[in-house]
Length: 334
Image (cartoon, rainbow, N blue to C red):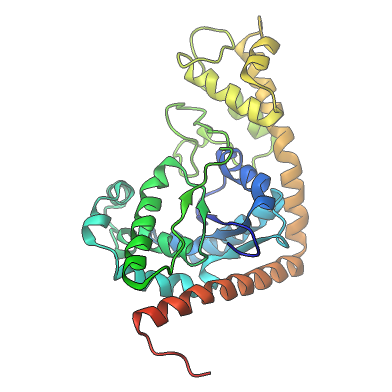
């Protein structure tokens, strides 16, 4: 608890371009719950370097991501929006937690196996200990709840195990985080392969709608979206392509699947795809306009970055100093 509110932590990597799936599935939901929690939303740029990054491009993407957080509606006065790399406690706590994490636990992480297979020429120690840094991210702020996707469930489970192990030795040092069980954002699948989640790293650019896509590009991608053979707008498992488009339409308009089926009864896929595209353009335009305005105000953004890094550093230091004292590190001379 912080200032009478439960603490919520989450973050996104500063790699790739954010997609409509990132927005409808996570970012939009962050905005909706911002008033209910004391929130820490990180641009997790330290996680990003497990894969080789171009330095200038990483800096650019990190700033773009932080700006998008704000453009999407997160108030930086009420939400701590910051760069992970600007708070030294993440790395310091991660090292300590490495010493309380077992090799066998890390060997079981399926995401490490998947990424190692994709980047066989760069299977580095950071990729292996990625879950420990994620544990440090969460435990540093004594987070009560963490919204995670299915692909990150293992990482939250190991975070809980590490926290409980440390607490069993040294007392109640860490809050053991729970999975966020509030309203879940829309699950958006690839427009070209509805069996896969829409992804920043999709090799087929037509599979994803990026938040900075212009209206013509959005419409073109929806026109090319994979559909099904039934030739009717019906929400069912037998039509995964149309089901995905209906999910996107509902998330963009606030309508229900039943209302959508009724609206497009007797109409073809062409009309429906155009309507979905236009609805998404309507969602993205205010965000893109706000993003453009924010980018023009460098001093404002720099002020937010500095102020929120200081807040994150202050809060995280409380946990870090407590941990350092518990494990026997010498106290700092003031």
